[in-house]
Length: 135
Image (cartoon, rainbow, N blue to C red; front, top):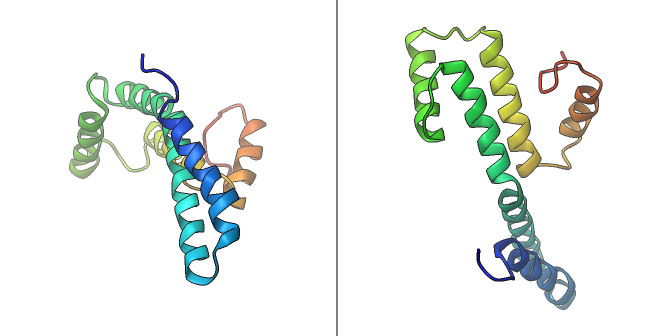
């Protein structure tokens, strides 16, 4: 195990510095670019915090769907191959459930405050099926 601070802590510290110290001292394009940098760093922090969990969940879904084990990258390639050759139909409920769950996991990192994402999370909480499209 590495000593503290870890990568997530470092990203958060730089984000706070940019937001609290740099942004108030800038104007115009520099302020805009600083805000873009803050957004990128916040995305990286979310990725660092959740990547292991979401990658493991995606790999487990793919292993069930494909009936084999392997690295996530290989499983995704196999899924693409099977969809392309028709051995997994685009209408397959297991495939649709996997794709929906993967999309929701990616939105949780990329756009966690996106209104439609947050609304769908609320609908899913009451659903017995979990990560599935509401309509």
